[in-house]
Amino acid sequence: MLVREYRTRLRDILTEMNPEEGVAIADLMLCAALETDMGTMLSVLDEEMSEESEEFCGKAIKELSYGKPIQYILGSCCFFGQDIFVGEGVFIPRSDTELLVETALKILQPGDLFADLCSGSGCISRAIGANLTDCKGYALELSRKALPYTIRNLDPCPNVEVLRFDVLDPDEYAALAIKAGRQFDLLVSNPPYIPTDVIEMLSQKAFVQLSELTIANIKFCLENGGKIIAYFPDLVWREYFNQLSHLPSEVLGMRTVEIDNMIDNDVILVRLHHINRGVHINLCIRQLF
Image 1 (cartoon, one colour):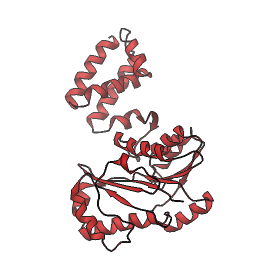
Image 2 (cartoon, one colour; image 1 turned 135 degrees about the vertical axis):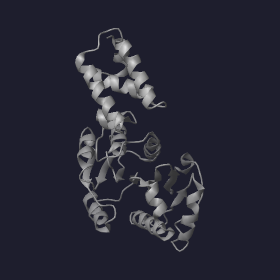
Image 3 (spheres, one colour; image 1 turned 45 degrees about the horizontal axis):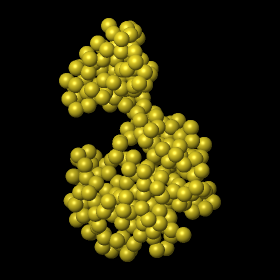
């Protein structure tokens, strides 16, 4: 069977399984089966499919039918132009997280120092480190399942060091400050999702405690006079943060603003949004001098 014919059949099968993304998944799978990129795949459409390639796709379709993400099946995905290795035990990078990288790239200057908290696959550190080779960074991750991916994905970036790190332990921050030998210019974080079903079971008090813990750890790294601005695309979470009125004045209310308008030397960004899968927290923190 020609690659062209197999591609059509594969698209039909996967579109039936996933009407919205079936065509894209089919091309990703076919490229992986042929061990090539999209451009080369399109140039060999009139060549014969090998038995090995058909067998690869057959196994991949079976795994997809069991609910396994295509990124786990292929073992990698693309994030901000970088090939990122992923698998069981590490979250798959989402395209909306590229906004966090874009913000970081606008903020960081040559020679700056950054840290990526809850680094996971290391995709954020990889994207920053690859684009700003004159900046030094630390990719910080606690999970022993995720760390092998963090290390592997940061291997091409000698300017980014991977460390096992507990973001909920204040002593770890003190040790990091000593290791770095200077203050950080930027902290970025894209922590794991809190599943919706878990959030719905959390009391308002529990969510406030979670928020206080997050803000407390942010403040550990701030200079005096630093600001924290909360960004809420979904207004439902304002009521929770309105409970934080007893926090210091650095918390400047619940303003909804565009992220690009927040890039300033005296601004720290905390972005939260409620999505179908849960609550997602992005932190982009600019150190003051």
